[in-house]
Amino acid sequence: TKLGMDYVWAGDGVLDGGYDCSGFTKAVFASIGINIPRTAATQSALGSYVDWNNLQPGDLMYFETYKEGVSHVAIYMGNGKMIHAGGDKVQIQSIHTGYYKERYLFSKRIL
Image 1 (cartoon, rainbow, N blue to C red):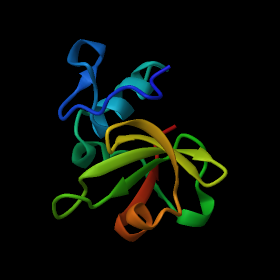
Image 2: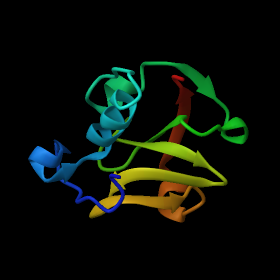
Image 3: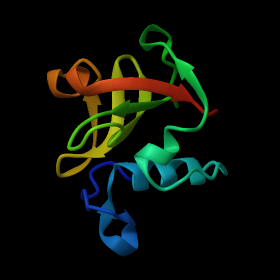
Image 4: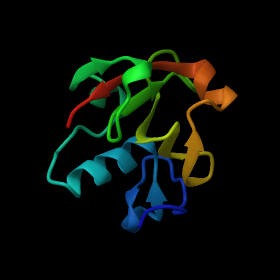
């Protein structure tokens, strides 16, 4: 239901007109009763590490984008796809896309 919503820096949802990456992941997890922190960096402290080759749907993927360290988060969907609030909207992309593959740091499993 959030696919295609606008990317909005620090956005937490409809009231803000859209989501940023961690606002999106927080909202998705909240929709299934799991409360996680608000920022990508604080979300990255949760869960257990998952190897790239063992990703499962629902795993959180972390990236270094606009600043040093964790600065972007996405949800792995399976079949080499992730969903995230990035660019200008909530979108599905390949995890093999050059931009994100080059900036990938690690993944964690919370579920």
